[in-house]
Amino acid sequence: MYIPNEREVKRMRTIAGLRADEKLTQEDLANELGVSTQTIKNWERNQTNLKGEIIKTLAFRFKVSADELLGIDKGVK
Image (cartoon, rainbow, N blue to C red; front, side):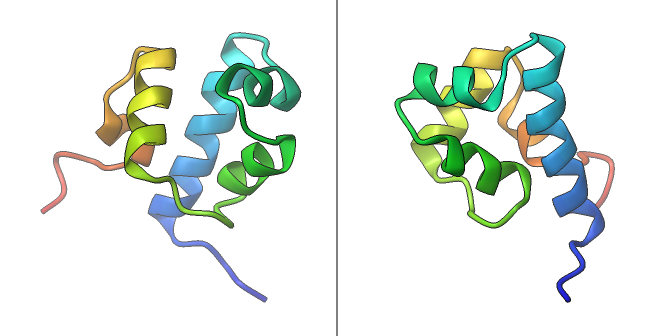
């Protein structure tokens, strides 16, 4: 069984959390972005990596930095 690392867990929470904060369903976000609901599920479960353009789109959509979206802690070196 695969156990995600801390950064992956943080990213999963971030996407799902941002979506939930705006009371969006996975289907709502999928329709807005022009992707399938399964794609949203995969991102939230960390089963599919986010690509460059979608990172920018999600960051802009939720008004967060790409680092925050990806769960990158700037204080960690």
